[in-house]
Image (cartoon, rainbow, N blue to C red; front, side, top):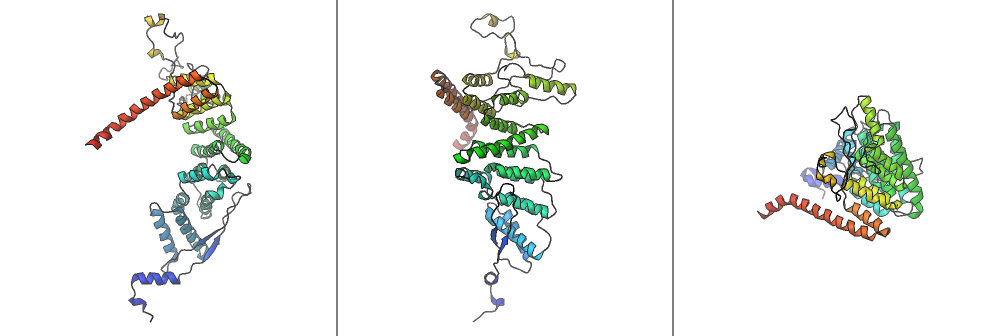
Amino acid sequence: MRHSLTCQSSKAIRNIAKVLATRSKLKVAIPNYYEDHGTQPQNLLVSLPRVLGPNYRLTAENALEDLLNTQGETYNRIWESYLALRQYIQKHGGPPVPYPTMQRVLQRCTPNWASTRKLVVRVLPQPGMWKRLDTAVHSHRLRTVLSHMRESGQTPTISDYNYVLQYMAAAGHVRGASALLKEIDATEGVKPSAKTMKHVLQACVFLLEIEFSPQDRNLATAEATNLAYEVIRRVTDQNIDLSRQIVELVLRIVKEDGRVEQCERILRAVCAFDINKPDRMPEEFAKRLKEADESNEPLPKPLPISTSMFTTMMVLYGRCGDISKMITLFEVLTNPYPLPSNLPSPSSDWWDNEEEYDVPNPVVQTPLKHRPEYIWEPPKASPNSATFAFLLRYLSWAGQRVLCEHYMLIAEEYDKAETLVINKYLQPFRMQIEK
């Protein structure tokens, strides 16, 4: 006997509606954004969700908003819900998906950065996989959302493009990053920023440094290197501010080519550090300083040498077999040349002691005599475990046993000092636990 719907509970009504609802599968054609590279994402089959109520669009929009507002919701469910809403709009018409909603979908329709990096590290050694990263890491979804933004009359902002480039950098997707950079150049009113260039360089660095299929190594390295040097040229021509991250990435890229002189030139011009004259301001930086002073522009400040830059240069000298420069770099950055304020007075007996080092030419800290407020100090840097690991590796390969023993002792001293610092910070928490 068929019961009347008026006597059923709300749960029974929902169940009957689900049975009668239509689940039609529609094909969604994704445009080919990589015609130049011969790759194309596969068409997707997406199931329209079971929607209830007379206003199907409102129900689909609410379902998508609920998924976006749910913390930890899977990216596949968000993507399918978004495509279902798009399918309904294409079939029945109506206003496009709101731009803020598309921005949220852009950031939630793919795996996070860490998951993408783990996936790529696992699958990239497979032959030819680096050419198929577009479908392997779902980056075509991001390009699809950007296309929908333009179709709705909205121009994606540089922040939207930077998010997509950041995702491609996590996967080392050099071809996708190159195509997106061209798209940014072709978009009116959108200009690449320093963060844009940083993400493109990150993609190149990841592809250059990771180990993958030997038969693909030469071609992948050539593409990544060409794109990286094109970005470096653009950064120089467009006078984009050189942040610490960009300089670190540039050094890592140049390191792969073994261009020692170019790396040293970058350090002289940006960080005011010359390994051949560590106690003097390099001529390249002094020229920048003089030009800024004559044109009444803000005086440039040397970029501090980070641990990453320090380690990169150590690896570069070690690969080239220049052990003397590698040791010099370590010593002058970890033990900077003494400043005039740290030296004894000229009348002190320190200068007459044969056991002490003589410093006939102290460091000149005021390169501009009429600007005594501008003070320059010799650069310094702090090593980490990777720095010592590379140092000991190249010393051992060079057969320098005595130096290996010496720097192993120094590494132990650094480790003990770091342990004391960590214990100092943890002491308040330990006292709270004991109470």
